[in-house]
Image (cartoon, rainbow, N blue to C red; front, side, top):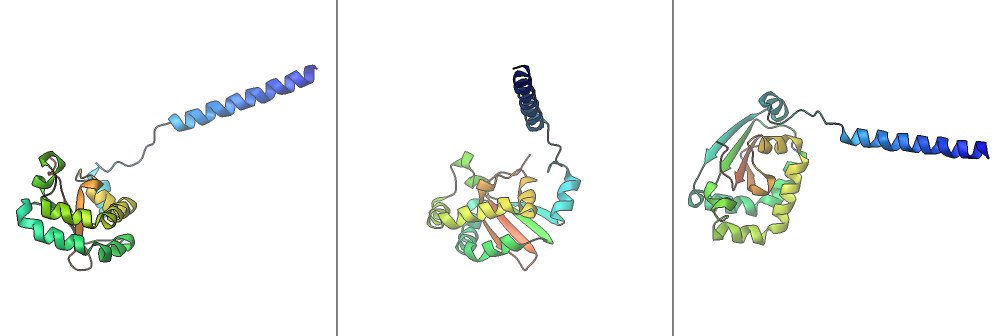
Length: 164
């Protein structure tokens, strides 16, 4: 009987040790390189990130055209690994705080909702583009559309205000 209870106690101790080890591994802090480190962002992006702010009415037609071309550009987003330049066009009067995009853009976003959702997933899955967006404190769900200006220049339209 002693060996059976000793064996059971030994198994119980090993099980408890494994549980503690698993808990400590999950609780350990992850020391990933943060995207707030500009040097890290520059290394990942490897391109210049320019910012521009426009009023919605000044960019409505351009954003609508970009939304209509999203299905063509999503394939490029999936494959892109390097860019020379990323331009972020902020549309602060289209931000959620201001009530969202104007009716013309909101209607087009609704019409192409599946394509827009796919774009946002692809942006999250592409480290280069995700870090370019995230480094400027833009949420992926605030990206309205993208367009390419040549092969290596990307323009991102965001319903957001520039970080102060």
